[in-house]
Length: 366
Image (cartoon, rainbow, N blue to C red; front, side):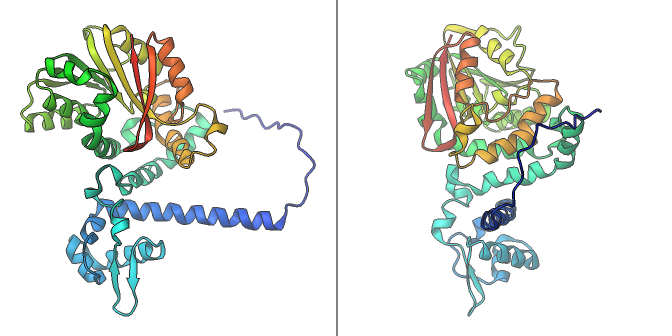
C-alpha cells in the first residue's frame, strides 16, 4: 500500500509552555488511571463482587471473597484498585472494606438501568480487537462480528437494563395510541433484534400482536428463541435475515430498531426497506445514540470520546468489514433526521428519556 507522506506547510515551531505540558501530561495520566479503573469496574460487575458487597457490613478481603464465591488473592488485589479509585472504602485499623450505599446504587445488578458498571464491559471488549483495528488503519477494511466474542451478550445485558425498566411503561407511550393498538393486535417487526429480549417483552405484554425479530446472527437468534420458549410465547418468532432486504416479509404496523441502524452495513437501504414495509398508518420507532452530527458540537458531551472509541473499535469497523458505509456510532441527530426523511419517513419526532442518557428516541411515520 502506498502512503502519502506529504504534509501541509507547518507553522513555525516554538517551545511549548512548560505549564501547559505538565497540565496535559497530568490529564493523560488521569486518563490512564480512569481506563484502568474502568477495567476493574467491569471485573467487579462480571464477578458479582459489587453485588456481594452491597449491603455487606465492613468485611475483610477473605470475607468479601467468600460472599462472592471468588479466590481471595484476586479479590484482595481488586479491592486495592477499588480502594485507591475511591470506589470502595477501607478501614486500615480493622483491614475491612465497605461499598458505600451511594456507590452500590450505580454499580449493582439491583440498580437496573442505573447500573453503570455493566457499561464498562465494552472497554475490555474493544481492547480485544486492538491489533485487528491497527491493521485496518494500514490496510482498510474492517473487523467482523466474529472477532467480538461477547458482543451480543454484553449488548443484550445493557439493552435489557433499559428495556426491562422502561420499554412498556415509558417507550411504548412515546407513540400516542400505540399501547391500545398493540392490545388489539398488530404486526410488529424489530430490525437488528440481537438476542431478541425487546421482541419477547412486547410479545409477552401484548399477546394479540404478532412480533418478529430479524437479525443476521444465528447465535443471537438461538438465545432469543430459547427465551421465547421459556416464556411460552406463541406470538414471537425470529428469522435470520439481512434487514437491508425485507422482500417477502409483508407489511407492518410498527417497526422498531434498538441501537441497530448505525451498525448496519448500508443503513440508508435499511431505512428505505423499513419505509417500504410500513403500512400507511404505521410507525417506525428507532432508538439510537444521542449525539450531534458535527464533532465540534460534541465537545461538551461528556461521553463523546467513548462514542467515537466504540465506533472506531466496533460499530464503524464492523460495517466496513461487510463492505458497508461505516456510518459510525456518532452519526448524530441531524444526520439521522435527514436520512429518515430521505427514506420516505415523515413527521419525525425526537424524544429523550431520563432513564436512558445514551440514546435518543425517534418516532417517524410513512
